[in-house]
Image (cartoon, rainbow, N blue to C red; front, side, top):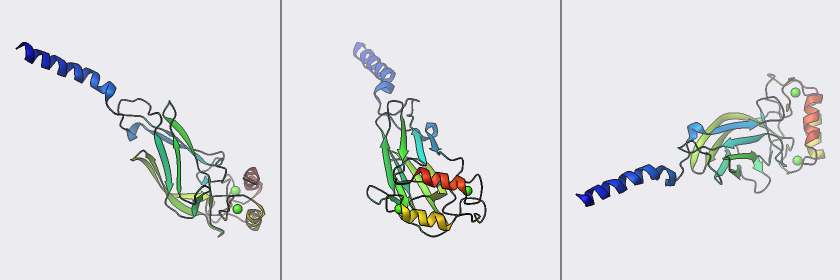
Length: 197
Ligand SMILES: [Ca+2]
Ligand SMILES: [Ca+2]
């Protein structure tokens, strides 16, 4: 009887302390995913330097605690988006002690056509999918994915000067600032802010 009580006591004690030692499991419903965008619009603008649109991710485990030192990847489905490090469509980072990381999208878009491309974007925390965005417009001042914004890109922007975006949204590859559907000084300022990046 004494042995049985001891086993029960150990089992109960294990149950009480077990949550403290169990491995963290990502709880996607508690994760927060938000685009950081310098411009107030819904298009995603990427730049070889990674300082245009970026993705803020905070990962929370099954106990509501932040997940530190956890890998996060952001994958674009459209192969015209090209990372400046390896030409891939994958961008990554690691969460800090608060479970937070800002993923820099260091990329150009290999598209010199007049219309912006669209892409699905999948956000993963480790192996877990925490968010999928569908058909996002993706723009870049690096129109030819040469990984620098230079005179070749400037020529493309100049060719779109003062045209009106077809539907006032993000169709035109140069409509970085959608506050106005026209390709104007607002877009020019955005382009200039990433010159030589
Ligand atoms: Ca370029
Ligand atoms: Ca505009």
